[in-house]
Length: 348
Image (tube, rainbow, N blue to C red; front, side, top):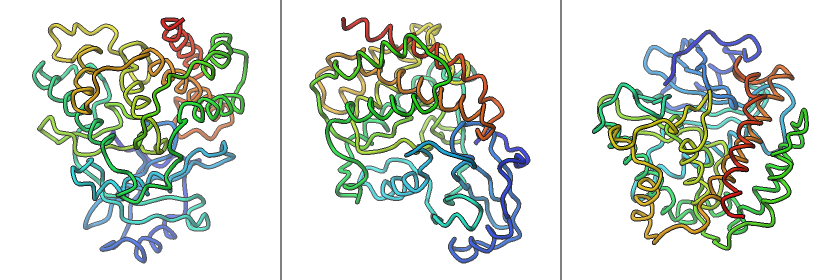
């Protein structure tokens, strides 16, 4: 995981109350407890819990007034707990316990396993060899395909979301979220909001959708190019697999100051697959012959990220985002809206 810092003042909570709760609900937990905060991420604050015997990770809702249907840590907990028992395991940390009682530390939270591994923040993998880059991207592709092949009803997730009409519901949701966090008029967002609901492809596949599947939200073995955990499941639901794949492929099209970019990669020498190769590998693993209307799925994913970025920016203005970097997201929403619009224009 990323480096830890002292807990930010606005995210402090009653550590004694947490210790008492963990001793009752987390198997094998024994204090004393030291709490550190992971820096990075803009949504649910994440903390390292250090005890003499082992470390744990705690994720909680942020403080303050929150947008409807956001920051549902209970859903993160539920999906990761369910995926631990799939026939072909989707790598997730062990879930210890969920607390939905705000009285303990102020918001709902869960405690999960602390894993030792590598999180790659730069998608160009500058410290890896071409062979390692190829293997890292191939394993990310493999895990995404395995996730989408999970029988979600068989693992107890039949009520995790509504099957079908995913893009219709998502577009409506993210328009509402954007409107709730809007601070100025962005012309490209207005055009997307007008165009997208009427141009959804007639392809209604259904699967678990992670919602934020990208390299930075995964963890790899300390020395091997093998994924050991998929993290940050806040946006997961029963959805459409191509929404995940489109989102996972966004960096071929955007240059983000926070997420990085693949737009300047030399695919012939770097070992990183180009977009066509990456999508083709996914199709082979999931039995697809190809993907029609591909720019829609990429454009939708960038549009949704623009809405999310606007929400982070608004929380930054309100003073309750989980990172000091939130205020840089004001320009991000405009940049992402422009990139999303460019994708949709390929279909007009």
